[in-house]
Image 1 (cartoon, one colour):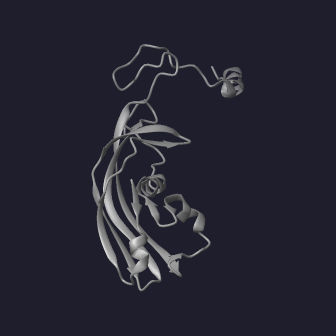
Image 2: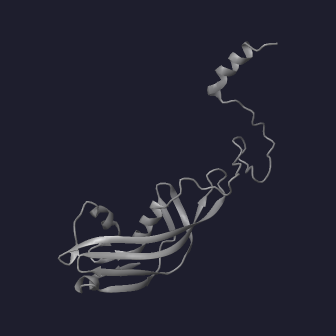
Length: 176
């Protein structure tokens, strides 16, 4: 969703609250493509503070389906996003600053791209690891069966080949 916020720059201390929605149906990053299961419309509060700062604030919840890192089961993950941006204004336009590149992602002149704004917030709050449950057993490295559903019967006592030399040492010097 694209918002035209040019009216905010025309009047000092002008405030607007708009109901916005997220148009993206999937979160796409270098990690992959993750479907958005649920996103609710939310209120985005925009305010021009004394023609010096532009404040963008709002809160929403977005549910994204992420595969479990151990067993690949789909896990609905809820992200509570609290948008709170404070941008500098000079001469009726956004000021160039050190983090202007960050602003350019969701602002193009006086057009605010809500999807890009939410995308940046999702990227910052993306979890390091997603598990379907704390005691997830993962998948069998031989047959690929989900071990949370039951034992597959494969012999998983195979030694790590990098440790085989140590096993030979222990077998050679084993006391009888």
